[in-house]
Image (cartoon, rainbow, N blue to C red):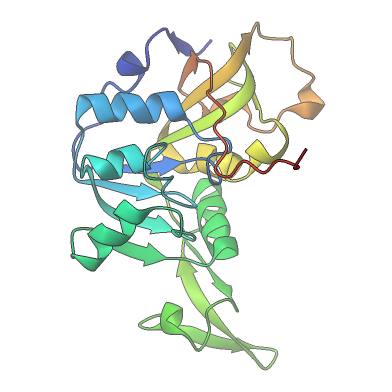
Amino acid sequence: MKQIYSSPDEIIEGIEDGATILVGGFGLCGIPENVIQALVRKGTKHLTIVSNNCGVDDWGLGLLLEKKQIDKIYASYVGENKEFERQVINGELEVELVPQGTLAERLRAGGAGIPAFYTPAGVGTKIAEGKEVRKFDGREYVLEQAITGDVSIVRAHTGDTYGNLIYRKTAQNFNPMIAAAGKTTIAEVEHLVEAGTLDPHHIHTPGIYVNRMIEAEQENRVERRTVKEA
């Protein structure tokens, strides 16, 4: 049985200043929004964040940015956040942009215990500067290191009391890789059920990767609402 918490503020106990935190989600889809808000309330600072993007100005990881709690971020897309842009231009935020597929594979490798791998993505660009480049079958590949973190925080649709997780549709995105790549994994779930309830064939993240769990509602914000004219 996993540790089940009733409060997001309790579940982040032990996350200290300077921690490296891996955060699931893509845009605002599948983000652990309640745990993020708990980190904002706690005021944890000097964080290194690894996530596909950094939320928007008033939601998700954008809330940590607003409070200047992030020192560095690894991300693949940062185009929806004006505060992010301002902090980068003013030298307040360090950013490492990573091709999206490379970011996913660096996280997957970290969870699998693979220290590094070669990829053709980024060869001949700034991405490859200072990195080893080798040829395989006549094609150049750049060496990329795996990513691991002190803490992983993910969002799942359903989890059982053994920590097994199921993500809903596109909310699966980066969550499975991130769940496996942290020393401690916190899972925020929409529905918590008893062990044995879930079909083993449908589980995306086995409970062996999960340390702490909380059942919490999600606001399900949409970045751009598009409607048909009447």
